[in-house]
Length: 589
Image (cartoon, rainbow, N blue to C red):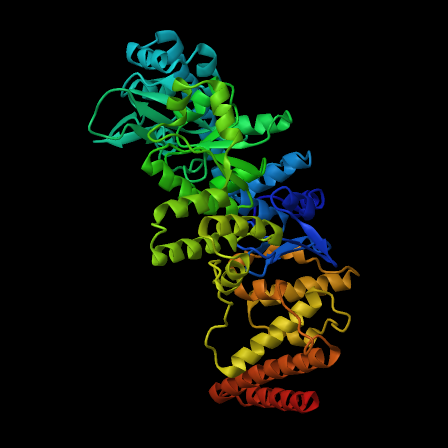
């Protein structure tokens, strides 16, 4: 119960959540032979190297090395901890979450804190909202009127207002929350030992995750000041702006209503709200930070098509270029809607009709065409050296496309722009280097050759037993040779399953060990058998070698004890043990 949940419950959870079905929600999974494959959702790649073993219920990426069971996959893809990953899978399989066991106080306390913070943030959001709709502070109402926000929009987005420095502290204290919780949840800050509202005297935009929970706030200053106009909640146990997508809760609702064809990605909260009030409910924004792979994966959970519609100024164009690679590498179909210079989506809708914006989105350019046109505009094509740079950069983009047919479409586009023949462009593209990340192979540390040989033998024997090779039989003589407590624990698990007439299950190891931080166990789980060693002869040679190493180690221990021992009877006993080990060593050769 090292996780705070019983092994029986975790086994049932994993049995009710087939890893193929879960991963297929996030990646395009295809079966080839006995293995399912996908492009890894955790790193950039063009050729699938992410393998899923349906029988053993675990995954392994041969590119970046990510490995785990269905719970570990959800942890990584959703950026949550073990408990919350289990909670997601329990919801998916209609299972009840059990109570955390009493001997796991750290986990229990963390869960309790999260629940407290979520309840407190919800209460705080309601408080801010009621300030706005009941007290109607003039500064806030003038801004809302200027932006054309009606009561239904204020309610939908939970928009509120912070009246001052101390009001929220007093309100939460009356509800029974501690000052420590107010600080740790990010609602309040401390100065000179005094607690104050972190979002004081600002218009408040609650940040709601895809599960409908308020996890933080973004707040806008309505008066001129020397400090930042927007302020987000500081990073907390439940809030990380690099992972939060504003309005993702609406996207989830649209998905459930089968009313979602694409997501429009904009830069700020007011852009999202402006589009929403004009009927475009499928807009999202990042939290005042650069787009991250977490943002892209959060969107990918719900659909594949994204239209980037950032501001029409130079900063917006640069942000568009930075976002494309992240979105494309997440497996999204990315389009770009270009706004006129200097306008943001809100400005555009104020000056044009809803139909005009709809046409702008409908005519958005596919990311490849957008990039080639952008590259084209950088250069003076009357100069041969600049034209050459344009061709080289464009081919670099086209080569990323996995479909030959799709490559040909854009090679023809490049031919029209450059007046260079298709055959020449295709040959230049073939010679161009990929920009995909090369992942270095994992290397053993610089151990003496004997230690390397020992480690290789241990890994092979345990891997052969774990992966149920026909030639691999349990041999108790190797147990003392294993040295590493984790390897011994693994061997004992295999031995126990064998005695019970059962077969070891690979995914069970992810409950027994922290596999990502345990190199030997990781290597055993993901062992790659080669034609040279995948046989009975090699297995028996490794067993003999491990037994020999174990006996030699025991012999050294007894020799040291014999040297130090002064009692005559004990020396005779140690001498007998020495002779027995020597005989065993001779018999093992």
